[in-house]
Amino acid sequence: MKILYVTTVGTTMNFFRAFIRRLLDEGNEVHIATNQNISMVSDCYENWGCKIYPLSCVRSPLNIGNIEAIKQIKKIVEENSYDIVHCHTPIAAMCTRIACIKTRKKGTKVFYTAHGFHFYKGAPFKNWMMYYPVEKLCARLTDVLITINKEDYNFARKKIKAKLISYVPGVGIDVDKFKNISIDVKAKKKEMNIPENKKLLLSVGELDIFKNHETVIRAIKDMDNVYYLVAGEGNLHQYLDGIIKELDLGDRVRLLGYRKDILELCAIADIFVFPSTREGLPVSLMEAMASSLPCVVTKIRGNTDLIDESGGTFFEPRNVADCKKAIEKVLSKNLISMGEYNANKVCSFGNQAVFCEMQSLYEKKF
Image (cartoon, rainbow, N blue to C red; front, side, top):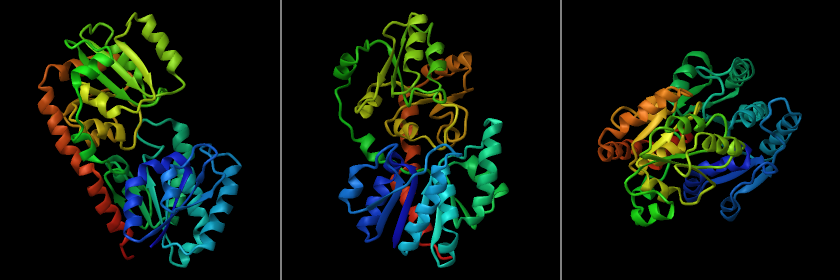
């Protein structure tokens, strides 16, 4: 097969490396179209022989660059005889499906993976006004609409008319990579200045309003036996640092910035806390589960697909008291057995499960 992947920005392609490597190993040809002026595609794709086309699309729905992107994609697909054009992210998906109207009539199949609809329960009204009508219309130009959480899948089946609507459990993760890590926990805790007799909470995610780390920081203010590490960069770093100083949390809460040792941090943590206010199906949460961590998470779509009371508990987004109660609840339980339960459960979201689902869809005749 000859396949074109289309994304709004280059870094989105990081999610698909394992699957695309497998496609290439099986003799398929894969091209990529994306905007690398915003963020770059991983070097591995060029090393693997994937042709990369530049696009002018941007995340802002009303930017004129998106109109130009439609023309660019149209030219790319008309000059190549693709079997499948697979788009990701809302803007690239809109541009792609409009651009492929003619080529669909010639047999090209258009796939769209929705990594979490921007219209969801509790989403701002403007999201519904802007994104839902576009998806409603563009779905009619879609051969396969893939959703990665049950809430989006159920909604799409009721309200959106694509030729085929399918549920695939995420983008896949390498479960074995997290199970097989070997680390000196005592030495790593010493390196991170975590006292051995304290409990360690870990969060991984951008420092922005949607990741909601402030709620956790405020929740542990009076929990003297708890330390909290946050791995990630973002525009709220200075703001969150100010809250840490305001609450006099000293070194009990630390913003670590970008880290390359997430697996090691997971290995020394007692609980993974995921306070996000919106998600599709969070990879960092799946990685924490694969690391055998019990999880305290917000009660939102995606999180509820992954976590149940055997492996953690939920709290309401931005509710400090509820967050504190949830952390205390999990701390009172058997952390090891909860972590083991999560490690077993996340296997159904691993690479092998996702690969099988995706290959079945790619090979489907309709």
